[in-house]
Length: 603
Image (cartoon, rainbow, N blue to C red; front, top):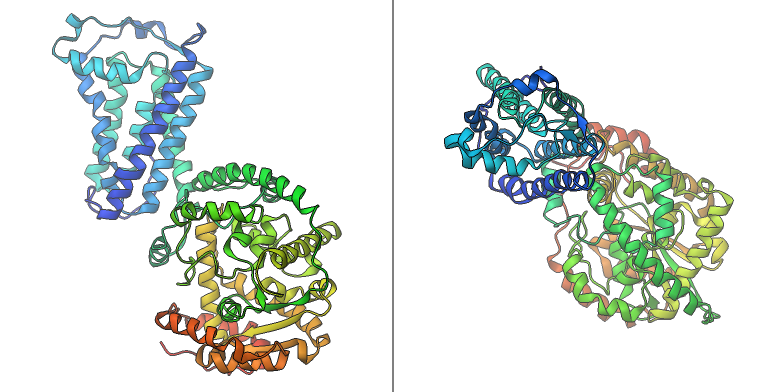
């Protein structure tokens, strides 16, 4: 009757660890209670507003005797619900089981509204109930008046029995099936449900266990347990502000339509929160645009300095080091992630942001603060530019990878991107201190021709890193951002091929356009040099690009390095198969930037 999803057998009941128990009884249980009574009670309330009823019983059912003692068997579902977390060993399975019950309840709620049932029996008297009166009245009160078909009592019993059958031995599986049968019989002998209700309850429950539950397991996070633990330490919850909290509604709608509204079931709360925030952001955006048309752009500004390179090549670290120079204007946290908010409003929100925001980035240990310089690409997307970063929002839609380079945009999209970049740079030059804009984005690595068209005198600092360290760090970053910031559950396929393809796409475009940039406007810098000898490396950058006297910014640089003295980088592991893969696919990168092919890291 109930499909077996697992052949391995172990103890049926086992007390979960403290975190799993807290998640089960502190999060999922209240959620199930609220959702159940919202759907079940809401359907009964709506049905009670009219007199339309559907006859669901057959004539012979009216003659069924009332057996009040069967109410004990009927009520056994409630303790079984309490025991359900003890039959499940992982958070992933627990979440899938909870959503299966919610789906079953929602399906029942739809039928309750369409086919409100007509009762076959009159309410029993206290004399007929005898000693079972109090329990019967309590259960009858919970059941309300009009919700008959399908029997959610039977449907929930089928789901719970399936959880028991997945792990229990043969006697436990037999007992679970007999219990479901007993629940079905008790619903009729206590005059709570008709035969058609029971049958439909079995159907809904079986659909939930055979289709919904396995689907939820397949689409759940396929990250390893250690990966999920590392991410949860950062405290990323659905109610916290995400990287996309500053998006306006027009762009949010465009992103959703581009990705065919394929939001994973468990990410719907995040999507709803972003929708509400996007409406407020749209209002602020309109107000800001009205003010901006009255402002004149700053003429004669120095061309921007841009830090480029693949993700995890050290661009963020160098960005922070150079930002201590007072000549540079850098996008702050609010500029990058709340681009539609006026500065005074951002200052008012700082206490809230400290509570609802995040202290560190999900992929490393870098502290996030309002004054820390930020990457441009997130802000460009939030302001309406088409962006490849949609693959972080919807990790199953890999087609967004095409936008890593200029050829991946349509003419209309390219013009929109140009406009947003110019507006972004203009805002930084007006609102941030300093005479020269300092920008950083890995995406710029593959879009040199676009940047040179907008800023013909721009200068570039290009960072590279040992591929044996770059690859696992980039893989971890993709996993971390897709897991914590995505609106889809990442698929089963690893991100290894995705990361390898990203670098290839970026550097095919970079190699085509970088030779046209003279040496005084482009410098290649190794990540290892920035880490091992930061002062000497920054001084070299200042000399070659003629950025001004290095000694003026040196004291600030030394103070920042002293504060970062206790910083601990993440340790990543790369296996032999991955080494072979990057040696084959990234051989050109090894050769061009003089990294030794085959000199693999020690484990």
